Length: 111
Image 1 (cartoon, one colour):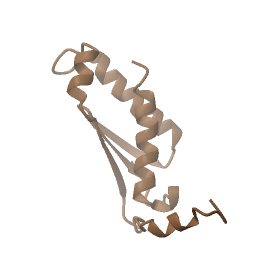
Image 2 (image 1 turned 90 degrees about the vertical axis):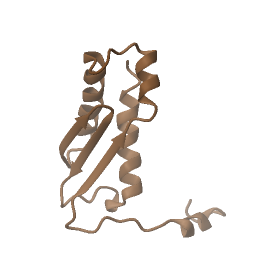
Image 3 (image 1 turned 45 degrees about the vertical axis):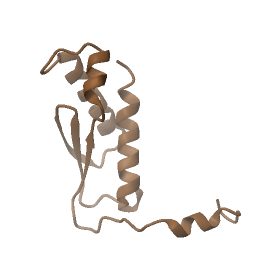
Image 4 (image 1 turned 135 degrees about the horizontal axis):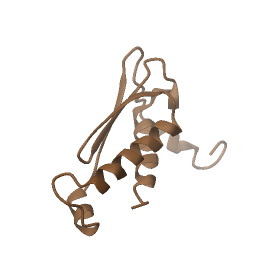
């Protein structure tokens, strides 16, 4: 967008940097997971196919970005902890969430 008529859009951006040395934890929560479970006929409460899918999605995120040091999943929720020293996307929370969610959700399409 450099030197374009849309350059003004940057003026609306909000600085949302997570200041060092704070840990960054990105939490992803499945939206409408109940419907997704019904469509794919997952058994309640813990369908092995569903758990494997969520774990594969988390593994894809871990493989894509080595600054993640820890990941934890529970049901349709996953949390990712980044290194204190991470400079990924200049530690901007909005971009971190978007990036991790994109990788996670892209891999959930392989049901």
